[in-house]
Length: 304
Image (cartoon, rainbow, N blue to C red; front, side):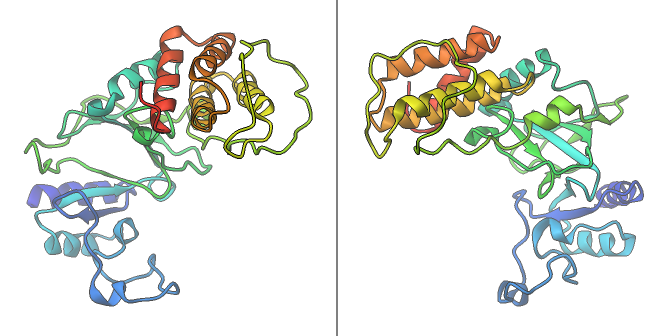
């Protein structure tokens, strides 16, 4: 506990608001008073030491000492986003994070920066907050940067060294000799939420037609009145995606097209062929294209 307190006070001295999680890495349960309060309850101003998760984070030394005294066996955590000036890219090898990270590095989206080796063997890559909102997302659920890579920005938190992982018993530790770097603009763009799927209402023709595989059959089904237009909109989104966002855009298009397959508006073979053509025209590698289609289909319940 003395090491944990010393680390917490050091983080606070650098302007990082910290708080304590339970040993399970989940927020400590709210006290009965906070549990029963209504929507007018101000979580930011709540005086409780451990209620409301990251809203309890602080840089005040006395309060930090009291929080750690209250949860001495818990996990020290950082409130990410604008309050700490950080965005953390969380790489989880157990869910394909290493492959996704390597692909992102090849595309120049993850420049070298300060990082933590987690107690489970993952990585937390720390970047300076860009000054504009960066939402949290989970790669395992098909959002953000890809499978196994989570973005912890505004509204998020991460476990800090020297916390001990509850399952492995190994500590979180900083890699030596690394400085936290600016979050590159391309990474900021890639972290933005995917645009909502196009509606099924009639739309004007795309200004620039996208040469692509022509499906042998698209047919009204499952409430999709204009499947050919919907498919074209998904493919056009890939064609219009700026460099640095084409892989996640292709993934989002794959999810949308997967829903068309499930609605019996297009065959799976035609869907994969159309997405592959769009991916190649967007200068994606065949490996990335296959991964985007596979992961997008899987996220919508279309197993390989």
